[in-house]
Amino acid sequence: MEFIQSLLANQLLVSILLSAFPLVFIVLMVLVVLYTEMKVAAHIQDRVAYMRTGWHGVLQPIADMLKLLQKEDIIPTKADKLLFRVAPFIAFTGTYVAYAVLPFSSIYIGSNINLGAFFLVAAGSFVVIGILMAGWASNNKWSLIGGIRSASQMISYEIPTALAIIIVVVITGSLNLQDVTKFQDGGIGNWIVFGGPLPWTQKLILMPFTLLTFLIMFVASIAEVNRTPFDLPEAESELVQGFNTEYSGMRFAMFYLSEYANLFTVSAVVVSLFLGGWSSPFGGFMSGPVWGIFWFVIKAYMFMLMQIWLRWTLPRLRVDQLMFVSWKVLTPWLFVCLLAVGLILVI
Amino acid sequence: MSAIGTYFYSIFHSLYTVVVGMKITIKHIFTRSATVQYPNVKMKIPERGRNRLFVNIDDCIGCDQCAIACPVDCITIETIKSTPDMDLGMTSKNTKKRLYIPRFDIDIAKCCYCGLCVWPCPTECIVMTDVYEFSEYDRKNLIYSFSNMTAEEITAAQYRLEKYNEEQAAKKASAAAAAKESPASSTAPVMPPPIKPEPPAVEPNKG
Image 1 (cartoon, rainbow over the protein chains, first blue to last red):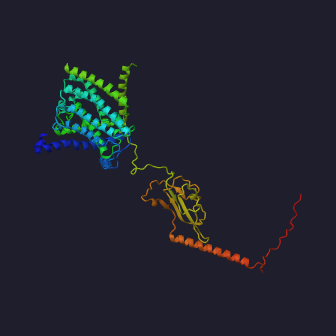
Image 2: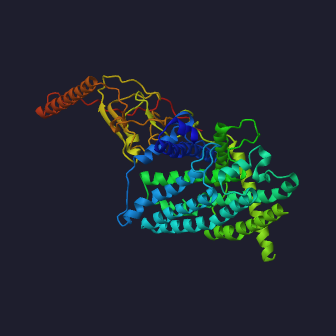
Image 3: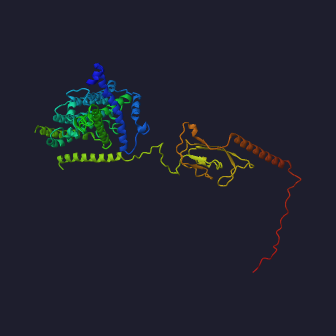
């Protein structure tokens, strides 16, 4: 951040540039993830997708975005006008704000606050408000049901997310995501999912618990972004499109964009906390500030691939099963892990 | 099983099923896909399938059976009788053709591909081919005309027919008039002599 500041003397310009970087990144990443999702989904289902626009369809996501941009903006007559219009922007803002604390590289982090992880959980709640508003303002029973379900789901899965973050904090001692990543620097053995940079005796006992935490956080993060098997709010075969039903054109594009941006955010959080963020798995080889971005994006992309893979494997969970999983499975096991990690580190 | 037991069992069982499912899906990512990418690759269709109609107009005798059989009336046939002095040629079944066919239109947009027109044709000149890609931009191009008579030929045939009909009518009129003119004519109809049965030349054999 400092060297860009030295290039351009104007403080305001620097801030604008730095805050525009995640926006550009989101748009480009969404294009890549859309294409990946469609292609992977197609090959899992033994079919090909998108062969005609560009070579093997690489221009298709651009075509999709252009299509959404030029669609008519339909607002139902009885819809609550203000809430209806504002909801997609609140949802997107909640997602975008989380990019401020993601450590893309050792030199680039939007805002190096000491409460990075806590801030992420809080920003996640912001999205819930947007979805509730969308569900209510659409004046549509399916949207309402979808919105309420989504709100309950996201709130209940924030508990496991927050607990998993606490476990990592217990090991590293800091909520600052940049510090957590620096803590794991130095090669694959130092990653927290394998126990962290501790003497090997402690590590061996710690490893099963951190692995379990990692797994639980992964599941909770899928639920946070409303993806199958937890996609009841937008269960396409049951609720038409859930809270999205009445949205068309650019507003729908905002929800869509925020869904994929959220996908990247939670993958990135899992990667930063457990898999070493921007540090290279080889230690010194292929590491450096610019390589950092590469590793960060690649690891998050691997997670997104796993989420896409899960989406086309598993059937949807019923809403009571969803709640069961969150409160009765994820949370108790995380308490066990927290206890164990705390004990091991104290002894 | 106790409640705790079911609880642990269901957790491990569901994790196991997730892993099994993921193994299956990842196997499918690497299998060849089943899509036939249509305009570049075309699937083989059966050669005796019912697709676009074709009429071999040189074989058509103008019997109108296919037009009558068609359930949606998509075939329109108009014929002109030929005069006895004209030779239209033979069909493939070695019968003489007696009708000119100035109009044989099939509206292929109406055609329901039932194949009912194929069976009554005496010379098997209307057949269903295996062509299935014949979309047009203009609907008028979907009315297929199989007749190959030019306008001059049509007018010539009509003219000949008219002339022939007039001649026939004139002949009939003159014959009728000639019969009416002389009720008791000198030329009485000549009757041939009565035939007497002759006795048999040889006695029939007795015994």
